[in-house]
Image (cartoon, rainbow, N blue to C red; front, side):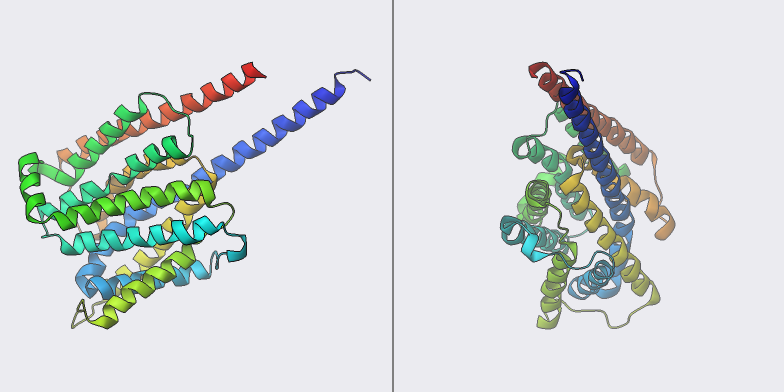
Length: 328
């Protein structure tokens, strides 16, 4: 037998393990990609829920349906196997993100301000990638950051629509009602932080059912306290929005958490830029929304920016693997 036989056997075993690991990451990333699709569907549905039920009652019913859906699909997490940091830091952070976003929309003055609060909240994909680079040690290239700027510019164009976006008007509205904008920023930062914590501490647990149960309790208490009034008449469209919206959000949350813990965090964050694109396309069918030329201009920017982010990450990972092979 050759003296190199044991070494070759070890190398072969390492290649098999690497291939299996890479396949697992790709599978988890594909599962995570369902999240932006479902979020895109849920935007119009949530709008219908808010109009049909009000803030507290609508969110309570929405999260209740999501909780039931997740309970019968992925079940409850194993708390004995969960990292304590994930249980006591990451999960409350996710709940804070949900509450901040809902309150940001609720406290906005509507119209242009609601759109701008949405823009502020859509900083979360950029922040997710930034946190991945800073805290999760994700390798990347310098053109990641121009890609983030281009993709976010596409979000601004899409949400602004044909009316355009005025920085001066934005500053005036911020001075008039800073709370709504700060809540939108809080939602973005906390969601990006939760995604980063999931990558670091999530392990093999998926706490989505538990998180939605807490959200249901929070908004249920707001509803019962009488701080937010519900509608006097409930229509079938609102009920359908609750049903489909709850399922969509539940699937999105479970898929995103799984993808963040086991998949490629930067690819998923870059793909999440397509959420407003998909929401606008879905709105064409659900609420008969009209898409003008500015929408497609924004889509083009989102595509270019996302491709730059993906390429920067892929080249960074390949460079790291190449350096490691040279060192060995």
